[in-house]
Length: 164
Image (cartoon, rainbow, N blue to C red; front, side, top):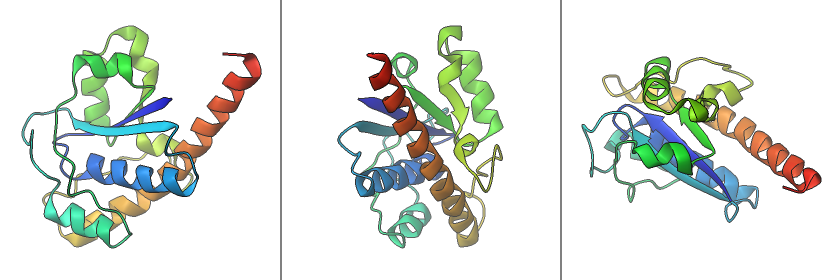
């Protein structure tokens, strides 16, 4: 089982959208039983809250439902538990690298490091903007999710060949 954690600041916009889009892509690829997906925030502002209604609306337009998700803050155990800890921007990357034990730093990456169209850019927080920001985020997330799936399947095939 491969485990992926999507991380943004408050866990009500970008990371739940990324969680939902990854779940959809994994299901479409027939990998949903082999990959566990979750999301969290670096701050506790919205612990227990549903995703922002604008985020829910934007992903629903792409066939994904995230209304059942609830915000949570990254826990210390997450560094041990997850294979991929994918952040939406440089600020949240820096926060997690400062917090995580050094042996887990390699797991922490920007989500867009997997993107072909938007490599290593930030998924900018759409919270204070209009609907267009959510749509732009989803375009970036969808592209990165496809690259992430390629990475996960490539890593799984390498493990199988090496006997691990």
